[in-house]
Length: 298
Image (cartoon, rainbow, N blue to C red; front, side):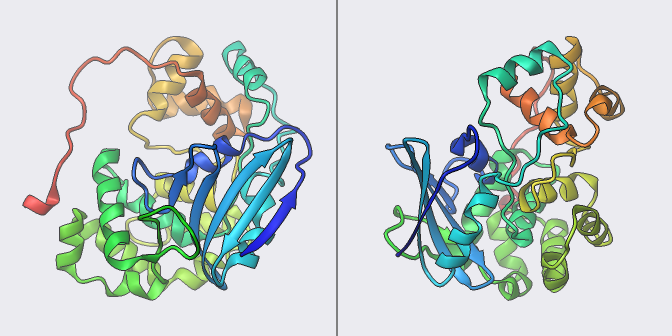
């Protein structure tokens, strides 16, 4: 086991910083203990690791196990948003200003691991969350490896990049992912080294969107998590535009309308979208919802 003690500058909400990396209930890479500590697995450049993060008296304590333990602890401040610069952000809507006052510890962190964000993002393309998360659990259960150290039962580490290229079609089918998403992930895995080496969010966006099956939404979801991009807006999201419109104007809107509303937050549009989620404001549910499909039965 390796350990690290880190004192953040200013308020920090560890739960909010790590929440974006949780992929639904039962995510094999993410657990939260009864004492509030968060467990997370990752495949670092040095190998797999398990990271436990807890907070006591304003100090963050990190414990890590596995070959990637030292890398994970070195990257811990970045993961929790130590380099997130919100100095240029001003909440111009009262509803967002209220959320900022209630959540002074909100920070956007970065993992530095592109494929870990890319695979579940592709699985979430154009399907409901339950469907994507079920596939994520199945694939990690079949191809991931047990988490190092005393991790909670059932935790797994994402497989190596080469494994994503070798998964047979019948196992993608058993996971519930159709051929299009399977091909997108496998193809991206062939370019993983170049993606992981991207130095800026602009470069990563260009590389991602040059790959078949990866568009604006997927690129934004990846850059938010891997590089902590505070301006990467998830255009094309099934819910986001409606939520932004309702929270800021009382009426639902579409993607162009959302971008107009977020224009005053240029440079921090993702941050503003996160604040919208935290308002808890939701438009009245009318009309049919997206149904949960099961490609395993096709």
